[in-house]
Image (tube, rainbow, N blue to C red; front, side, top):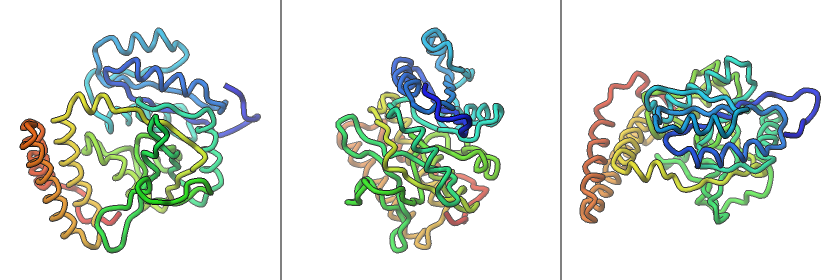
Length: 302
């Protein structure tokens, strides 16, 4: 890795692995090709127990590997990496999915943006699919609609300067150390899904801004682990979607929750008719449990 000067902010990239060592290895290899000289990498093996940690350790002896004795899901597993980043004095932590490939200049461009943008607490890259199509570029809240606008689905020109958003995905987000010290880590009550949205909402409430840097790019591969656990994914996505909109209320939150229930119910019906009864039932259980969860922060505004 090329040096960028006598001193630059240190970054710890946290890569979460669960039974996909070959996918994780591709991600780590792309990070090792980064042109940012103050980058450290930590792999968190999330209770794989399939030889993943040993295989990755043999392949990347220069990379730190943390092992959990059980699957802590995204929030819990990533928090192991974030605690490690804080313990070794990192200025920034880069939370990212393992099914990603980073451009050689991505980390450098994210850090440069974070160091110059006003009150920047989180900066994210533009994330593309392998064929070049846009996958994610943050989202923004809307005044008259309870669900945010996905920038990736808009016609916004992404060739210009960094732009502010309200939410970015945990697939790739550079987090300033101050943010972690001010608001804490990912909320592990969001085991899978919406932990990133909750984190962004808490960061904004603490006075930090969230940005997307268009010149920084990442490729997101197909989420093999999510596909492998379709019922579990359907359950978690539905449950924590409900939880998020209960905790971080939009002015039209009541209408939003009603619409959300209709959307998820319609998906369950469609899945049932398509012969995916296990997925449909899991989604309905997620809907039930999401509305039944006791929330410590219910009623806060994002």
